[in-house]
Length: 407
View 1 (tube, one colour):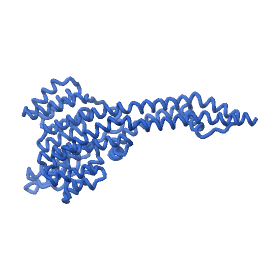
View 2: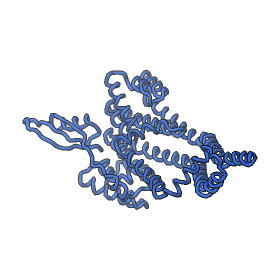
View 3: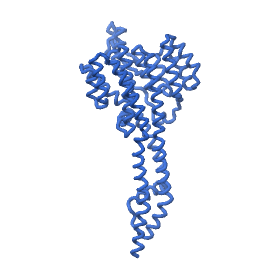
View 4: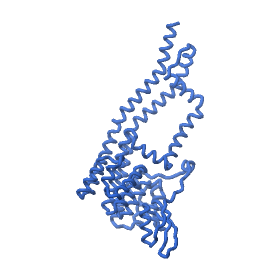
């Protein structure tokens, strides 16, 4: 849960300062009002950001997704059965066979006994409980519907795991094609083209552009390998570091919507999360503005979270959820129209549940057809690459034949 630094005035007019864990600034104001404080200023506490070297060498234990799904579902059942939370967590920690999850749960129990909230205790174990997981728990705690949110979260995790597995299966073909192309280019440029190039030079045959490109690649691999290979790995590390920065995360999250083929899947997954959490929190009776705050935290995309902040302002101006959604470029028109029908008919929860079912089916269908969508693209790339390599070899040969015939 985010931490906020506040400055306030108590009932005696004395200035007090402190920190509070809260969903938003509005939540901080509400908590201060309950203890008789008048807030003067509220600001978000910047967490310490690990350096690139820290992140590179930081060791963490990651949980098995299936173990996390089982724990989440069992924990939701325990909460629904009114079993004390600490007792339930201790039982689940004892039963799980996942070492990382067991250690995290034992520490969570210890932190809760020390006065921490469930979400606050879970946030200390990012290798086990992701930001999306923790923020979803925040939503359940804030709305008083923790068991419903956990059930929804377990289905979300299960669907995400199934989606990842299917995407990985669909991406095997393009990965194999790219690897084969890289290997072919490496072998040709290092072992084949240089020999031909020397022969063409001796016969004073002009080298065409495809052949020159292959020679440049060969020169880079053979003469500057100590720069080429570290540069490739360095670029990968720099990319990972960049997307973990605030600016990089924003750019990367925005790019996810624009990616060819996969972007459609990602867009539908985010819409599924949006409608799912909005449905649960709306039915819990939370105020609309607070609901939008929590949905922004659980969506898992900073660009869409910023868009939800704009939606919140539109809702505050009286446009309603549907009007704000229809004005947004990130939300499909269908979402706005369905919410509009739900608002006018008084059946918004039913419409949101229908949207959840629709996007669940859309995600599964799109992922199932992913291989079919990718194959034409990879075939075109393969054809262009093979043609380029063939031309780099045969075009000089045709020039050499002309020289021989002319001689």
